Image (tube, rainbow, N blue to C red; front, side, top):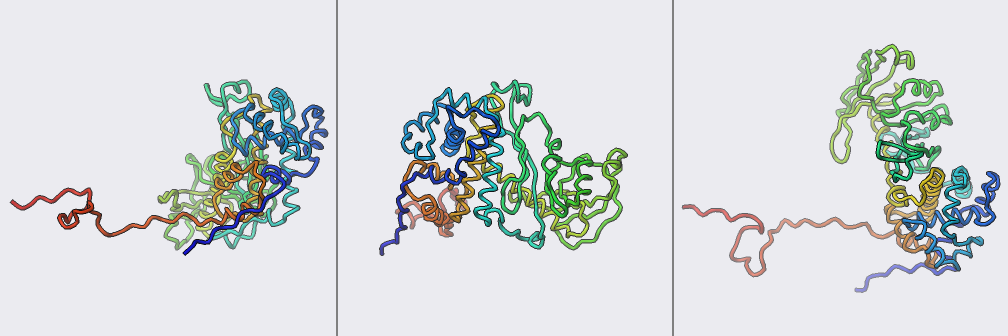
Length: 426
């Protein structure tokens, strides 16, 4: 019986790369660059942005690799709104001298444009489990560190012999899209950027964060805004238990109402805090964790599940680090690094939009790999992703209970392969 073969994607007049970048509004990069008074006469901002996008999609390791590849495909590239292949020195100079605020503004405007064109892209999925009844927006904040070379020591010194940049971010848990991002050197502690990340939160919003953001004046400001928070408890937090709340969930160890003991902490956060200790599964293992929150109505299990939802931001950082070129930087000064990071976030945004449009069901890394393999192919983008994105998941291996024998020796042994023979009685 012949197996049914999947249909092939339709041919297109445009390359994969052309179809992805067409979601960038026409003329927007150059418009923003002119507003920032950037010199784009010899090398347009659109050419600059597309060169960096190609570097991320293809995971190119150097300026020469990007420039050589784009010159080889110069005919296809020129069809994308007159974009030109960059020369190495021109490309390097643009990364070094142009204001990275252009890339930042471009990212947020394209995000807004995609959500306007496709409202379902910003809605996200419904919450599951214990937090399914929560009808509020849930956000998570965290940061990720990007290792840099020693050439970056003049602006990004992180340790005595290390340099690094850091991206602070707040994302919406429902749609897994960034709301606020700050890209800078890694010398600042996470908590110093908490106020900037949460300034736009509204009354009733929910914030999730790890213990790095347990800063009591910051938490008090959130409470004054009407924002509910769930954070992991700091190890050295001093407190007094005021009340033990009743609970019936076997995974909950304690549910307490506490007040801060130290005078300095009490002045920064004078209200009572709820402290929940629960057993949470981490990588298949049961781990005891304690959380602090300013909500006294949720069940203790809901609080534990909310904190688990915070791990979605870790998945976001894992996606951008594994699928984009953020391990090798093609420029060393601050502007060049920020340009590469912001355009990397833009590349991630465009891939996620392609995933949403095609309803891709497989992993994000396979989606990025498919796009990388087909960048210069002339086939329909969405149709290709629809066909290849519905492949059957890998089947689990079947474990047989029967014993294995050397071929031809079945009748002469009753011992399973690899097991020692039992000693015969004396």
